[in-house]
Length: 470
Image (tube, rainbow, N blue to C red; front, side):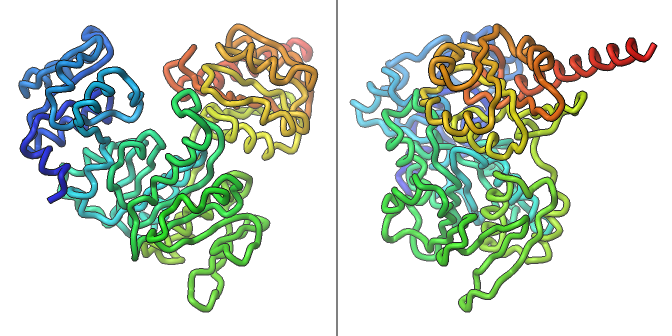
């Protein structure tokens, strides 16, 4: 029995954070017989009444509005939610007492009975995770999709676990506390600067991503983006005893098991390198979706999905909202919602997918990235940049003298300003390169507001057109 299981089933466990992941962990731990305690930084008044009632019903000792060292040093084990900074004073005090701390991925070693494919990367992991699930379902498999998106892994662990395959999106934050998490297939999509407000360096962030392979061994499989320079530079971070490597990339390199050209993906998995070809639907042909599709197809094939199932799943797949999603065409100007682009790499990819001049709406809460890394791409694709949010000053300095830059107070103002200056043939793109939390509850709310304001611009244009015709 793993030491984690022993501490769960015989000890006192503090769950830090009462979000979706924390609640799922608490439910799972209670099911295993742990004495559960909860510590939540938000005030009690902000917690949903049904959650407070559940905590009372289960007789769970809880604290709100902060974290007490007394509670943490009394624990045998601490389970941290993904968004919790690991350098908080109470966690440092627990480390000094040698009290271990884990995240929900660490439950998998002892309690997960289903084969698992796990997907990480700075960008594209939600798309790949979702597409993987759809490809496997199209082949008739019963699939659980969750982790960092949708349903936490802990919620699946308390079920009968009757899925044929578990597909998990895993973040770097989750991997930091994953202990001996060992996916049958691990997928690493890319590594670009992100979350540098949490990690000491870009190298430390990259090392965190490579933890997806850390506990793999013979029989396990690694899917790796061979085109990504940061991944190639750090391939030695994967242990020598880890799983077999499978590469994908747009470059037709001899090492690649999957390549793409003109919307057709070629896969070579057989020992004789014989080829399988998959035609992508229009929604997946442009970058970065064609790269995402290569990773998903490889993952599906390595998990036993048939070629027929993959082709059926590709044909039926719809791209996800707020990821380069087309919103409207107004007088020859196309509007795209890429609110999910919360880091530099995602914006770089979005801009490179554009073939027309771009009015870029960006900004929000800074995540520690170096916006100057975007200068070359911005110079090639952007005609005007409209900046909002807390990071607009820093971003403006990064692009000074390169293109026209305007700083605005709100997303609504930026959308309407874009409507004023755009001409037929332009693209208005929301691709923020920042978190949303300075002005919005989430990137989803930010994207929704963007779309609402675009529709207001269209209504205004329609009224003007009717007046001209009168």
